[in-house]
Amino acid sequence: MIGGFCEYTVVDQASVVVIERDIPLDLAGLVACGVPAGVGAARYRARVKPGDSVLVVGVGGDGMNVVQGARLCGASQIIAADIVQAKLDWARDFGATHGVKAEGEALTREVLALTGGVGVQHAFVCIDPATTLLPAFRATAKAGNVVVTAITPDTVTEIKIPPLELFVTQKAIMGAVYGFASPRLQIPELLALYRRGELKLKELITQTYSLDDINRGYADLEAGKNIRGVIAF
Image (tube, rainbow, N blue to C red; front, side, top):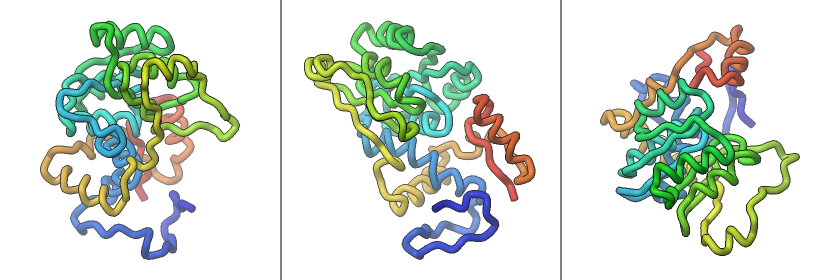
C-alpha cells in the first residue's frame, strides 16, 4: 500500500494531507509516520500529564518521538532505555532526563531504583515487545499504563504477562497505531509545533542516503546507527 521508494504514486484524495510549500519534504516525510506514532502515543494514547513519570524502551524512530511527546506533555521524569549508548546520548537532547543501558530484569531494577521503588506512571514499548514488554510492565507503577508502539512478526501470538500480576497491579496494556490520532489532525499540528521551535525534526535525521545506497541504509538501520535515515531523491 505504500510506494516508499517510488518517484510517483497514485492515491485517493482521502489519503492526502495538504502541507505548506515551504516545509522541506524530508521533514514532511518524518511527520507522516515515526513522529506522530511517538508523539501521539504520549499525548493521545497514554495522555501523559504534567509531572508524570515516563519510561521509553527503545529510543529509535518511534521511541525518540515518545520522548519528545512526553516532554511536550510536561512529564517531569523521562527515562530512556536502550542498548545503544549513542541513542541514549541523543535522547537527552530530545528531552530525556535519565538514560538506562540495560534490558530484561536489569532494566526493571534500574527503573525502580530511579523511581524510589514505585515505577513509572507510563511505560512505552517501542522495540520488540516479545522481549521488552514484561520488563517494562514490571517497571510500571500500580494502575499505570503500558503502551506498545512496536510491531512484531505475525508469528508471535502471545505476550507473557502473568494474569495474577496484571490483576493485582491493575495496570493497563494498550496498543497505539499512528499515535492513536488521525493524520489529518496530527500532521498540521506537528508542523505547527516545529514552526514554533517546540518539536525537533531536523535533528531526527542522522544520515541521508541516495536510492542507489538503500542497502547501506537498511544495514545502518539494523545496526542501530540512526534515529532516522532518509532517502533523498
